[in-house]
Length: 182
Ligand SMILES: NC(=O)c1ccc[n+]([C@@H]2O[C@H](COP(=O)([O-])OP(=O)(O)OC[C@H]3O[C@@H](n4cnc5c(N)ncnc54)[C@H](O)[C@@H]3O)[C@@H](O)[C@H]2O)c1
Image (cartoon, rainbow, N blue to C red; front, side, top):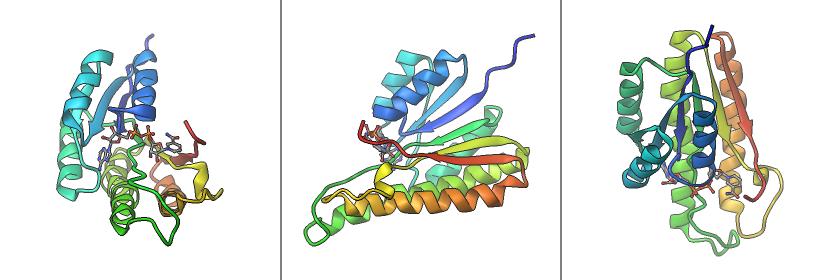
C-alpha cells in the first residue's frame, strides 16, 4: 500500500533554504505549497519543482488568513515549515538602522507568531501535524553586527517552546532548527 503524499507549506520557499527544503519534500513525493511574498519568484520555482505557489506575506494577518483558507480548501496541511525570515540590514546595536530592526521584528517575530497562531489552530483542529520553525545558531551565539536579527531568532526559539507545549495535547509537534551560516 502506498501512503498518500503529505501536504507541506514552506514559507519563504522561493529562495535559499526554503527552496531547498521544498525541493527535498518534492523529491520525497510530497505536495508542496511555496508561500512567499515574492509572488513571481514563487511561481517560477513552483513551476520548476512541481509545487504550488501561494502568495503570502507572513507578517500580514489578512494574507495569512487567506493562505490558510486556500490550504484548507485544497485539503489541509500535514507540515508547516516557518522558514521565511529576513536580516534586513546590519551594524552594531549603536549603528544598525532602526528600519532594519523594525523589518526583522515584523517578519521574523510578528510573521512567525501569526503563522503559529493561524496554522497552529488549523493543525490543532485536525488533531495532527508538525511545525518546524527555522531559527538560527545566532539566537544563542552572538555575531557582532547582527544583534538585531539574532534577537528575533531568540524570540522564534521562545515562540517554538511555547507552541510546542500548547499544541502538544492536540497532537501537533512543534520544533525549531537552528542553522549556522549557509
Ligand atoms: N542563510 C543562512 O546562512 C541562514 C542561517 C541561519 C538561519 N537562516 C534562516 O533561514 C531562513 C531562510 O534564509 P535564506 O538565507 O534562505 O533567505 P533568503 O533571503 O534566500 O530567502 C528568504 C525568502 O523569504 C521570503 N520572504 C521574506 N519576507 C517574507 C514575508 N513577509 N512573507 C513571506 N515570505 C517572505 C523572500 O521573498 C525569500 O524568498 C530565514 O529564516 C533565515 O533567518 C539562514
